[in-house]
Image (cartoon, rainbow, N blue to C red):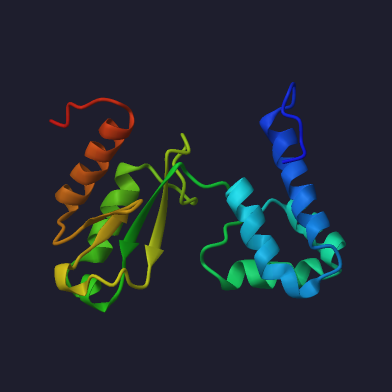
Length: 173
């Protein structure tokens, strides 16, 4: 990385990285998806200023970029939590009570209109399928999968994860 980190804020470093990515792909409209993936890896989401920077650099419209960002569910337009909880709402999970589990998780995490907790620790995603129908209903926390869940078990898994991630090994609840 050509950016010297001495005395620069994290935002300044990120801006420098985004500028380098855009410069490396300048004028190459066909590189849009690659550029978006690289920037998502740096920022974790897409603020408006980054969309405008990519548009200027690649020569595409902001509406084209927005179309790509909203088509693929791995891109985010708002800041994400440190950890991602994915709750399946597919057919097998639905018939085994996933809607109640999702609602319990939302309530437990105190999620209002957004899908990220106030402390930015968790982001919740409802997904069409996690590919684990045999152990429905299913949710994941980052790369860990939890199956045959009840509302209470889902909340317990979240509480244990938070305690483990916070360095607290007491998972008694």
